[in-house]
Length: 572
Image (cartoon, rainbow, N blue to C red; front, side, top):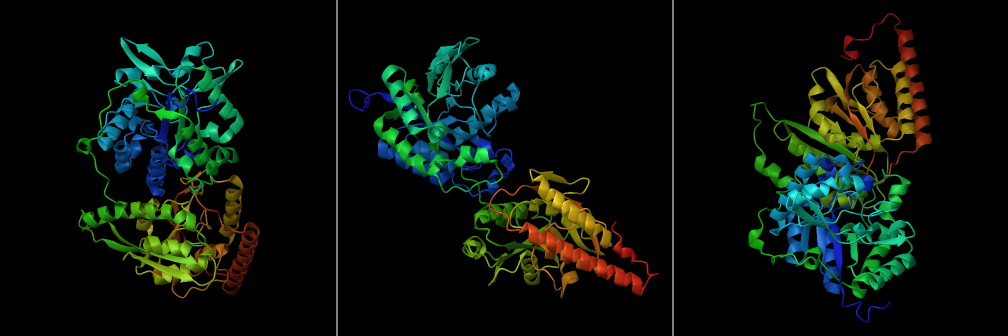
């Protein structure tokens, strides 16, 4: 059926989910909410694209917005309201109803509403559960929403045989509870025999055949009197969004498939049908936007907070200078995340340490050098150094240490697998007589999160061999995450400047009698970008280094068989 003959005149319901690419369900196992601020946000860009698309089509929509965005990026929410669209709640964090008790659900519903109303100055009368939908066992949540004064909910997604005995739940209906009522606005679906199939947009629009979706939507419009309830996410207009590579192959399909086609698919339906808000369909009184009602402001940027709060330590202790060295090779995709993480770390230690950074571009072939200069080039606390050619992570680490201005030097990898916030506990371990503190996820109190088992097995095997030839008996020798005493590394030369050289730095300290201690660290899976390590070459390099160290130990023992290793070689 064409858009002529009355179809274009009917007004359907358009709902849009306002969340960022790092908030969604496929990545939630790897990206907890306290990491969200570390990612480069694309939500403002994607929301602007969405608003422009709606203006182009003359459509209005109900935006279901995460309360977290209202609290952290209120300007985005205010702009949606200013452009004449309805603000509704999608909870505060991206949590499933299955993960919340009624009390937790009520608390989150209240917190989200407050954040969104403060950000937009508009009443929030609608709700949609952040992750998944309400099933038959979740209808208690409608009771809570009714008690909290919500006018409607849009969380029911009849799929398969669920609600097959209650076909009315496929359509807009009223839910009664204890003298209160709330309207349910489920996403539209199609009956296929005994099964209910979602056809309402979003992931279904990206994954299912377009001929099927188009036929099903037109059939709904032709046969049903109820409005069609359509939806999509603002991040679905962003095919260039960073890929979270920790997710499984199936989850990558769910998250990224057909993103490049989504803009035109949405534009097609916006041009073919008229769309409005849920509040408009339910004839709810919804006031015009008034900026004077906004009760929140954009949070102060991290760099500004540091400037405002700089000063002496609260306990009167001197603020120590530390340098943080970050070697980078083809890390263009990770640098935004790294910048936000380092700013968060610096803020967390501002009353104890004066932090400076040395970034070493190790001959990258992508835009790493350009991005380093964009992000850090003008900052007085940062140096950006470049190797003309790729030499290796160990060479880049030593170059950074040579350029550092502090005696205490922290070395971290750019990939984010070790959280630099752990340095707060590692640095104090560099006591007099200790030349290095190395992070160990294999320590009895360490932890490994989502890292492939085969990678851990290789690292454990190498560490076991190093324990047999080195004086400091550690559980982990291959970690790049360390704190060094700069003077202890003066003049150090490496046989291998790549990954094996990281262990060679530690072994050289060990062989010269340095004391090395371990910190029980948490190692996490890499979220952005790709590892550059060549597995076979690295294994061979470790075997060569172990052979070399064993030869040195044997030669030393033969030259002075009665010599007892110095006491400082024994780790505490």
